[in-house]
Amino acid sequence: YPERFRAIQPAIPFVTTGIIFITMLTLPPEVAPFGLSYLVLAGVFSHVVLTPRSANLLTGCAIGALVAWSAIEGRPLLADALLGTSVLIVGAAAARHVGSARRDALAQAVHARRDAEELSLRDPLTNLPNRRAFDAEADLRVLEGRLGGVILVDVDHFKTVNDQYGHPAGDEVLAEVARRLAGALRRADLPARLGGDEFAVLIEGPLTLEGLRRVADAVRGATSAFAADTQAGYVKITTSVGGALVPLDVPEGRRVRAVRTLADRALYQAKKAGRDRAIIEGERNAPSARRGRRRPRPGGSRAA
Image (cartoon, rainbow, N blue to C red):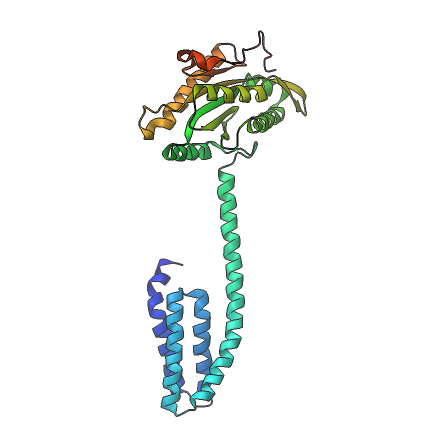
């Protein structure tokens, strides 16, 4: 409701009742009952347009006016009560219909807003959470102590894919990488598309370097060395993966930025080392965490 309407709501019951009551007293006896009908209807429909408190107040004023009018005019209260009841039944049915339509419209508006909010947090191409959703979830997980690490994934030589096969084929490649990425993760981990050919994953904690290595290898295994079936033909794809654990020695408010920086540095190292591989930041200082590591294939396939 507009602010002005909210401000005058408390006075509406008294003003409405007073106007109708004075009119009833001045009208001929045979016309005055119509004022009673209007008064009862005002009490009914007030539940549609007023706050519950104001509506209940107006209904109470209507009942008081009915009793006062019957006493002043010397009319039988029972007859007026029956008249008021009949009008109340009709009015209640109409008010219920109007109120139901209003509630339905309100529910539709709420659902539409939720859908719009959901769409604003989703990447339309891959249906993964977008950067905005990723950042919000990362902040929440840090506060809840559930963020163990971050993995960044880039499609190797993606610009070449767009140049050689066209942007529609590039979009198909991104959609396929997103599908494979999501399928390689645990339920608690959150994949997202940050933009372009850059993907990211929030890894649920607590987490060790060895655990992060297993997730990174699973991500690379799912998204690398496959041929995407596009409208322009099959396109060979590889990915570079960089990961990092959340640094617990950093203040809580700076941990998301810190882990993103570390993961980005590891991703840069993976690209510099020849792409088509996964590198975990800090793993060199933890030799035991490298056991079971998948070694990059010599001369691994490159993006078309």
